[in-house]
Length: 176
Picture 1 (cartoon, helix red, strand yellow):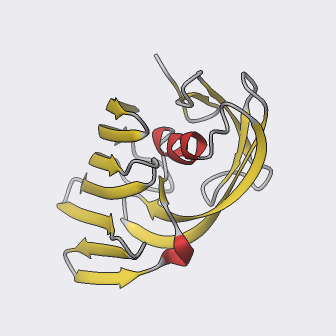
Picture 2 (cartoon, helix red, strand yellow; picture 1 turned 60 degrees about the vertical axis):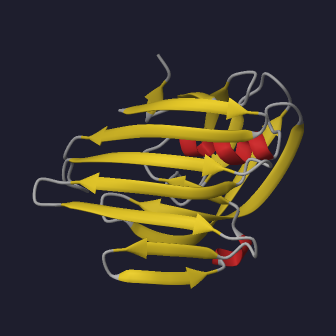
Picture 3 (tube, one colour; picture 1 turned 90 degrees about the vertical axis):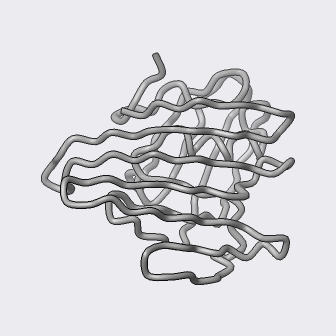
């Protein structure tokens, strides 16, 4: 389950969210709290998150500077990398993070195909990797097909509202 509170100011987004995931064969039960800020273009500027599992709680911060370099800070220290020019962050188990490139590329308003470099966050391990994400739209009011490291190779078709926010991610979540 994901719950997110969103504040919009033009293309800027400020979001505070929580993800709660039950234990499966692939991962332990965990909870995530995140705080996201984008810039005026809708590109991720800063993401802070806290991941809680039964044994511990850990924090991670990824922040993009003016040179489009990312500073990643966690318990092990800091690292700085370009992540192939990524402007977006995608987080496994989160329909909301797919909204960011959809809105930034205006795929909810037009027919287009885009392939974008992205930072992909694995949970609950808090892995940070460079990845490629593909998004395709056949036009306003149509579904948007997404291919990311967390999806089936054939992709998944998301339903979005008129503002580009994900309202249905088949097999993962639906907005209520």
